[in-house]
Image 1: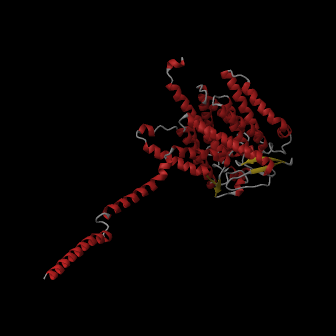
Image 2: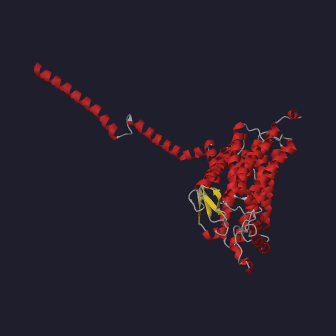
Image 3: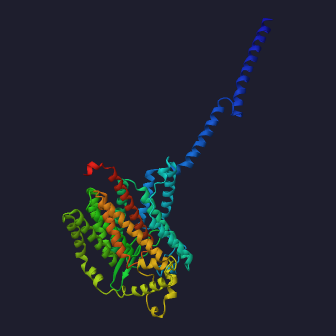
Length: 500
């Protein structure tokens, strides 16, 4: 009986252990098969939440990057450096029209992409601002808007509207550069950042031209995505170097404006680093300017330097130290190359200057027939054959080498008046900034004003239709508007007693 009782007792213990095992096994199985229960119930929602957060971060990351000031500076640097580098191509390329001086296609470049990102960034920052007053504080250049509007309106009368749209698009892109710089360059540090990039781009282009002078021939071509250009100078065996920015006349015009800015820095109080950089740019850029053999650019720079030195002497009574230094640099550049310079200035140009006179006559004929809206933007070459009578049979037919006549012929009197008003407004802003007497920004403004004034003279003998100079001119205009706003704001903050 004891034995049977013991067996029964053992059996009862075993049954209890088996029941306990089943009780422990059942929750484990349920936990695996049903993740919404027990400990797994809190793990899976956390994983789903983490995945959702990662998706939100991935979606918002580009917008957060665009709102970053560092990324905005990078994009602005791309726009500025792309002026001399010219990283891009043309869609819908029209080689026959390009061969006669028309804008040859729809320009797509690094600037195009950078501007799209910059304006998206500007929109994000504008929406993030809390007050309506902050959002509406925009600078608008009415003459520039009017010039863009008249140019766009001329498409309606253009014989080749596709060509006109190429011009309108390129002008719109340049206007976007102006409005961004004029409204988003707000501090002195921003100004110096832009100036540093302008000098850096000029230094790069100068090095390229100087290296090309000794390493390439006129038959060397490199068309994509960065272009290099060298041309023969008549029958002399010499070359005209255009570098990466374009044909030699365009490269020369770019260098003349930038070297005027570099000269202006020597009259300011920007510190030794900027002055040394400006001196290097003047030296290398001056030699590169000679290698372009652009007489118009040479004259433009000489006029700019004369204006710069005269105004400084007249207004501030400067010593002769800086003008003498600039004259010494010019002399050092001239002496080794005085033979080729004199030949280019005073020797035979194989009728190059005389060939432009018939083009002016063609322009006046177009203007007489189309005084209001012109023949359409970028349509001078397509309309040229209608006015080229038998007396032009043996003449060189090309777009007129005069920017003002070209605008008048293509967009009418309204376009020319708006363009002139824009140029005069730019000079006025720069002059006002100079008159405010800021030790840093005023000399910079005067250097840019002198460069623009020289370029305005140069436009009387060339058309400058391509991207680099359009964008450079509007970038400089936007920078002068920003500089004036900063100087005027600083002047208002100074107590009256401190200015007496």
